[in-house]
Length: 354
Image (cartoon, rainbow, N blue to C red; front, side):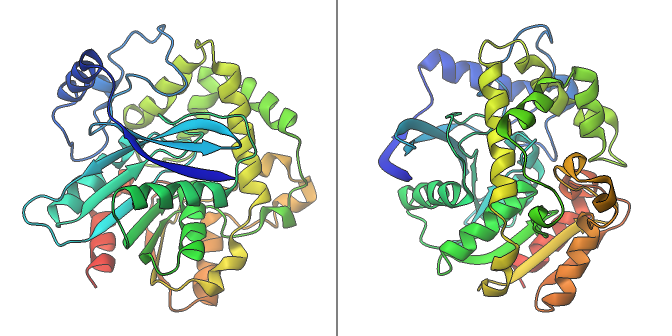
């Protein structure tokens, strides 16, 4: 169960705010055209441990927190809130991140959406990035409730949602639970286009946690590289850096357990059955080289060839729901907003302003 407290926790003491401001200055301003430059974000000594809430990791805007409760435990949900450039159009877009990505990767979409007159709210979900990491059963219902509570606190009655990867699953659940609040739904390479339980047997938390514990810096770099068939390695290296630095944290075992718990959420909380009941207009976007399948290594060998990769699943869904608009990005993998930023911008703005 999740409940919200009506309080905001501002960034910590003045010294902490100065540190955040310095980090943002080092990344060439409040907003960059795309992801913060790799060389700036890797400036810290890689041997220095990084806390599992990404303390000090630069983001493209000031961080605030909302106080919540999950499974009886007080938690804090981090978020960024950007006003539009100029007068604005009176509309707000929520950006929901993927599982293995910190929210600094939204810098490009934040920039172009602000220029187009939108307000942007960019939460880090509980269990991810700069937010708390409780040891509890995670569900998309709970994360959706947290997100709605944040929207309530900010006075947002209606908003559009852009969800990437695991954030796409959450976006679908959010639109299903709060159909009158979500005006438009944009899904970028969302997982959950199929029900993974049809192909992959259930795994224990201990099994999933052991697999994460076995990751090395080198193996994790290879894992991340599969997302990006055309992005230069230096541009995705920051995702490897923060994970590698976390390995030195005293709380790293807790992080590994939460990673396993959120994989269980993906497996146990399918959203495929919700598609037919969605009310808002839907934009479905996918790189045509995105063949990813979460948890595929646990599928029996005879089933692996039968599981549709993400792009094939996206095409299947678009055929079943012809009212959905499908946009494919040629030669692009799992994160089009990094690999094809201008095409992505055109697709999103065309949808939101259409």
